[in-house]
Length: 254
Ligand SMILES: NC(=O)C1=CN([C@@H]2O[C@H](COP(=O)(O)OP(=O)(O)OC[C@H]3O[C@@H](n4cnc5c(N)ncnc54)[C@H](OP(=O)(O)O)[C@@H]3O)[C@@H](O)[C@H]2O)C=CC1
Ligand SMILES: O=C(O)C1=N[C@H](C(=O)O)C[C@H](O)C1
Image (cartoon, rainbow, N blue to C red; front, side, top):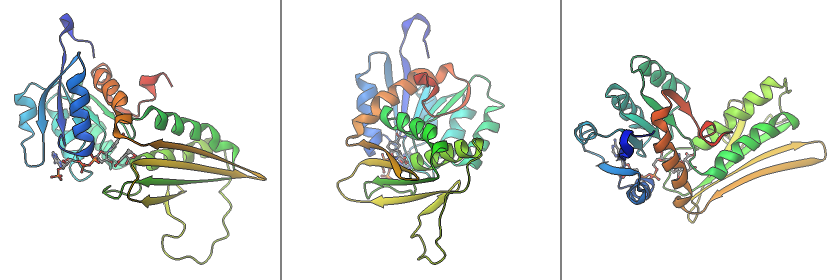
């Protein structure tokens, strides 16, 4: 988003006191071309965003509140960068239709801001059609509210789409007796296994297998700073992309 006269972009952060929100407050605060003008926490009014003249809001809150927050932004002409997980296809459709009446407003939904994670999803998409089997293991810190992760859901979606486009057969699986959950959750037909463990931050393995070989695509975020270059890129670019964009791929030229 280029500002006339070189003025900075006015940014508001929702969930500013959270693990991601507090990192984002620091990163935006240190960026010379951005101005942090609002920090919205649980219980605060969204009107604070409008009152502060926020141009770009960054949502890092909770899956239960993200749709209401984005709707408010769209209705008030505030560009939104959405890091919060939990926006499924139905919610994205709601955002799309809401944006129909809000010419010029951009909503950028980013399942994962880490550049390595964006690349790993793209690598998985490329690999998907060459292997009979595909499964995802995502591993996160135990305070995470949602399972599977937004990243895993998005990865499963792009893997499934690539397999469908290639006319790939269903993955072989002879399981006829299982304990609930033993084969993971099926996301777009791809089994996803969620691990929650102290000591972890955010990690994912996409496992592919075919006759005589396997391929594992792994990404690790050891520190939430890994997400910040992606957050800043999204904040700078969202105003130049009216409508709904999912993922950082286009912004990275992928
Ligand atoms: N896209 C990406 O790359 C990444 C996305 N995430 C996602 O970001 C979200 C937040 O994660 P994380 O920072 O770990 O979670 P935290 O629980 O640490 O932070 C969330 C913060 O948002 C606050 N909050 C909750 N509801 C609202 C609301 N309606 N308005 C304003 N503030 C609110 C919480 O307050 P309270 O504590 O009082 O509930 C808390 O301070 C998750 O959905 C997570 O999956 C996380 C990392 C990377
Ligand atoms: O909650 C987290 O921590 C993360 N959430 C996002 C997700 O659900 O994929 C991104 C990253 O995995 C960290």
